[in-house]
Image (cartoon, rainbow, N blue to C red; front, side, top):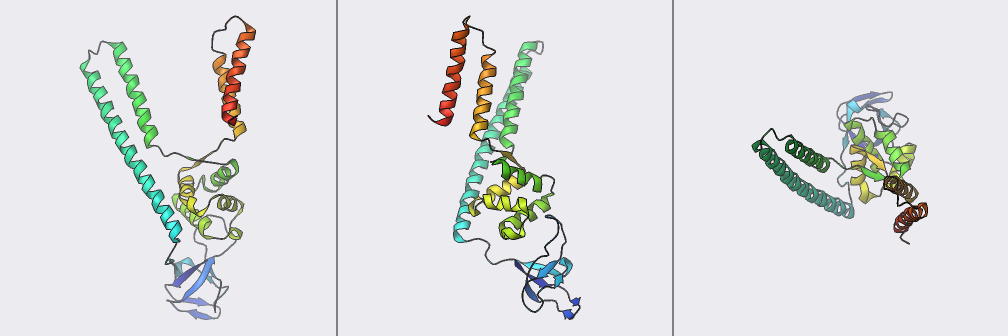
Length: 255
């Protein structure tokens, strides 16, 4: 629910509504989640129930969008993000300078030394991968149901549709949202709205359950174990594998 102000006269079945009129309204229910251009519907006052085309009105911004607690939480989060970005830029600058120094050293070596060329070429590639990893935006890890809801709603959405959907989720009551919107709203508290914005904008990944994490870890231990040369004793080899798995599972379950 929000306020709108007419910016030009509108003719209705009961006469004209003059420009400048202000009234409580909402987006007319019933359309697609990201449908753009649906009319407003007046929900109180003399014109309750009337539909107002978006071409005839503008939304009046609320004077205060957040409580003091919300504002402080968002401010602190922004400060933290700025600090992380500053540290990332410094790290990137160092890596780029190191990469340039390696290139210079490589140029000065005799080009006939193929082995040396390959060594420095590999080091440069690894450094570039590290730079790319640092500048890449990390996707938010979320429970499977929440991640699925976000991917369904926003996976193919434009930037405008993403931010319009984000606004709807944080501002509308659950009853006005579709199933995916309700799942998302129920998971994120007000102080987590920045995380929600990041998940919508940059995507998210499924957060592994303890069972999935243990299964993956045991599989990795087994695959690595099969590459180790046998001691010649099946019993000793089996005991070694069992000990590795036991230690891993105990650490995961904090036994």
